[in-house]
Length: 366
Image (cartoon, rainbow, N blue to C red; front, side, top):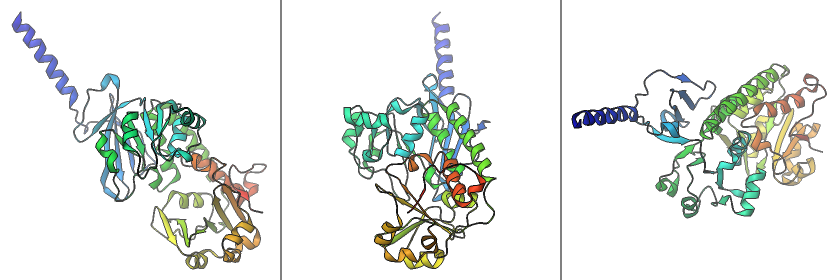
């Protein structure tokens, strides 16, 4: 009897050992197709996640597997394990919190960084009654508060040549959402699938993304063919930040039928330029899009901020459009719903393309 019992125990331990180490080289269904830096693969009992380093695509920022509670014993060589759905999480960005809210997982966000920028009603209410913790600035968060809140994971954004500081020592999984480095709007929007998988609603995320793709491509087909020249942003403290020519924002302007002055640039991030450089390249722009904070842009405000702004053709013709990002959900929406911003551009470039439709965000500066 003892002999058989020992044999049974041995078989059980062997089975568990085999389950705990998995070869990821096996077949699986790839779940992502638009994203350049995110690859998710359905491997049956788990989903593998590979996040490439946007600044060195031969390397990975992170590799982990997502498993539910029943499969938490699974492990894959070279991959960390994250158990889902997340029940407690720290989120650094209102952008990601907005998508999590749409996916129905906002109750699992009980700590945030840069709290003053969050607009989700439940987050605001939680900050007031203490159910949501404010861990301070995302650049130097309070590690004691983070440790006390005991998140299952931290959702943050990576930066080139920058680690995560002291939070790396807390032994809490950190998810590097590198979505903002994608080169296409739909590539960035596809990262909602990762949030869906983390918060237990992959099917909902997949459905939202598929609807976004359909709407985006339908709008893109209506883009005007006259290719108006487009200038974005504004000078601030002597520096004018414009989207790089290989950024998702540059691609969106082109998808809307616009001609972007820096399209021949290879940068995926922002370019830091002076006024003279911008004026030389875009003084004849047909449209100018400006974002402000806590006030609606106006021609007077632009002129008062920098007198030479009135020299741009778009200013002279009154084709300046602005959005107050404080009162609108501009930043929260367009990363995962680029079709809404694309719609704005097309309506402004060619109103006849979408007759009777009004813009979501941008209003003409008076």
